[in-house]
Length: 182
Image (cartoon, rainbow, N blue to C red; front, side, top):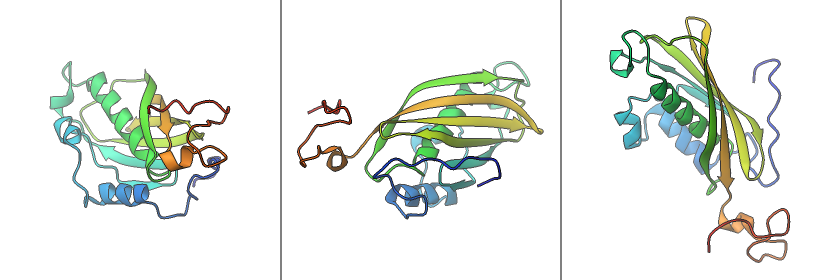
């Protein structure tokens, strides 16, 4: 954790930042190359992350002319793919095993054209609640932020963790149904 970065508040029943979980083992395998990438990662030429810790992930991307729209400028849609990929991967570092997530929204600000050259990408979970999370993603090139994004994730807890106070199904935090199907 870097100085000045606030510690992420972890909801009750979420794993301790130091705990070894199945999600974190998967993330470590993705980073090390031991886990094969999903087909979309290969198709869209998305990079493998380089390093992660609880609530953070970063890596290097090297877009080529293949990822440009106008000569010398990386296509914004490719940048959105990078943002979504890293925002999703960082979720593996904080969620309990069996929990799933889905990108619900994204705000992407392009501050400068990104060139087909090396850049760094970092993602950080800035807010984590039982049913949602907010992730900030930054793409830097030549020491300058070329893209900043905020991604909102919806979290769905494993069925056993969604049980009500008496152990029965349902019973979200407001006492009503948990929004799940079936």
